[in-house]
Length: 201
Length: 201
Image 1 (cartoon, each protein chain N blue to C red):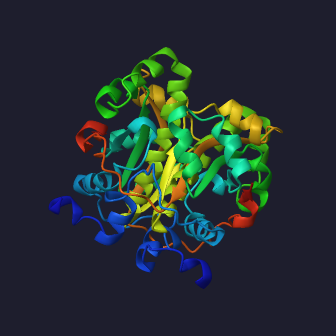
Image 2 (cartoon, rainbow over the protein chains, first blue to last red):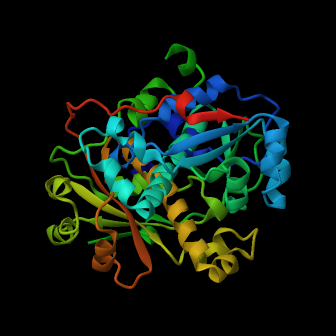
């Protein structure tokens, strides 16, 4: 680590908190995650970069037992119990009509909204890409609050969308359990080395 | 900021470096960005969470003038000059055959590879979502190295794919200029407030 770590400016404590010692959590302590904490996470990461300053990400917090149960019905068996037990579960979704805000969000390109109005497929793809960038910043933000995230995907997205977003304007990206983690004894899965993912021209 | 900032564990210096004072850069100093720096960025963020521990992200570094020119031909006019002048430009792409590595990357679910083999549309969407999560972690990592990123999208993706990935296995997500930034005098674009993007059930 010595050779490459010296190339970073971020201090070791922050490196550990956000990446090196952070982990995807399945189990959490009983400590609640209050709304001011989620607000602080959003306040930290809200300026993360997106194309045309678009901001498709929307967050639906499932705090009530009834709300949580509506999600769990659509999850795979392996994700149900941990979601029912998590202090907080957030649905990260995108607003497919995000482009309506572009005249105020990106005034330097007045034609941006029309571009997305004319091409709905481009708009949906842009919401997906930029909303997912924002979702990643949000996951990093959860870690910045000293908490752990347990993102879940691969569930019945159509079912979740019908359940929570019946008017079709929003589409779910991920569900994320949030809380103070109980250390997991499982080793981290293997990751590709730099030389396997980088080519140079 | 006081009320919510106290909810974060990440120290103020790191908050500023990664988010609050970071900005998308259009102009850079002449300082080079060497390969050990990109390696250090990848080493920091490589463990960022993805579904099934999949790792679709691939990075093509455009270091040669010839390589850079091949990209610039596909960019919008406003992105050309800044890309030619940037110390480094990276194409962030996904490997649409990422699932072949799942037996080693996610051995706890031996059926994962078959799931993606049977359903190519699900596989491409998964590469897009998880590769974009990884791209976001990489952008944060660039900032952790004290550098700035200038991500670009909305270019001719089909043209870039034909130019750089003619066999169809990889698909471009974003192009990112990387370097030590020259401070931009433009104000940051407005961002939605927490109460505009969060609902609770």
